[in-house]
Length: 371
Ligand SMILES: NC(=O)c1ccc[n+]([C@@H]2O[C@H](COP(=O)([O-])OP(=O)(O)OC[C@H]3O[C@@H](n4cnc5c(N)ncnc54)[C@H](O)[C@@H]3O)[C@@H](O)[C@H]2O)c1
Ligand SMILES: [Zn+2]
Ligand SMILES: [Zn+2]
Image 1 (cartoon, rainbow, N blue to C red):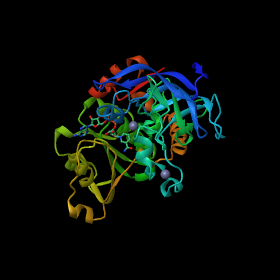
Image 2 (cartoon, rainbow, N blue to C red):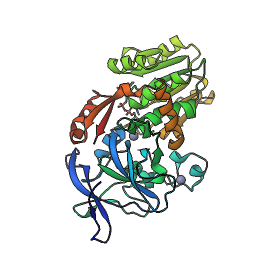
Image 3 (tube, rainbow, N blue to C red):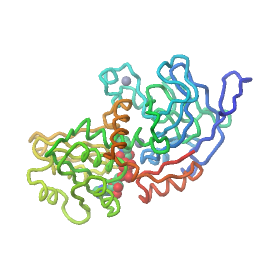
Image 4 (tube, helix red, strand yellow):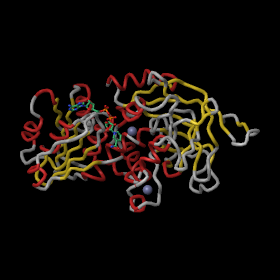
């Protein structure tokens, strides 16, 4: 248990965080965490995955910001209003949401009207931060958690209670990357037998899409990437075909496999040229799911291509209700149908910069820090 400072008015917990530095790397620093409010829990982290989104935000957030949004650990303390969680519960954490807007009330919390304010503003809804460094509140509550830290405060809407059998050293990435990739398949594209799906970008998100498409029974699962190693992994986890997009026209090569075109495609590259291919390779009623976040501002899609009944849709966090989808994915994993353990490389928390560099180089698909 972390030490308590009950003599000061706001009761604080001593923790260690990986704070963003001037150089846009991470530095382990002592920090203080508030005790959980009525609708929050205090979680001791066992592991946290590194997602491309953490690295993207680290390039422009202020010094001392605390990122991390694929945490898994054990509940240490619950707020006065928390009824369905207790100390000792194994949990994974996901994004947070308001719970009362129309999207939240219709089981679409990843499209919450307050999504950006609650997940990216660096603070709770009232502007406060549970994390302080050198006595000053810092940017935290990132995607409902800020789990590049030994402990985190999370609103109950972020918390996914896990089965006692869950491996907390590898459960964290289910709360973002794996849920995003798999949710895009099971909630949006919904392939079945005889479906043909292509996944552009075979990183953590894309490979989770590949696995979920195969587990859903899609008969054709094409993985597209520019990395032979990632394509090799894709074929080991369920892709029926792999294409290196540097080796020729991708749309033509997909149509050589599926002459009528795809039922669904997923873009995880965030590149406008790739999204264009993901749409052009569809059949007339197919759906392209845009998931990747990249440098492109605009995507150009030929007007007639859309007119013929195709759908292009953006997808946040796999359109998932995390508390529903994550246990399902863990059950798939336990049955050998969602072998995400093949994607993970574990690092000590102190080696976060090494893990981030390996992620940026593409040497590891999913780096996971352990505490
Ligand atoms: N929408 C959401 O809710 C959500 C959630 C999590 C992550 N993301 C975003 O999803 C994206 C993927 O995340 P990730 O962790 O899998 O990242 P990643 O970097 O591991 O995967 C991207 C893959 O795309 C490949 N790629 C690059 N250029 C390509 C090209 N021209 N053609 C084909 N493949 C190409 C890369 O080699 C890499 O394997 C990121 O942009 C991330 O920010 C979005
Ligand atoms: Zn993420
Ligand atoms: Zn909401």
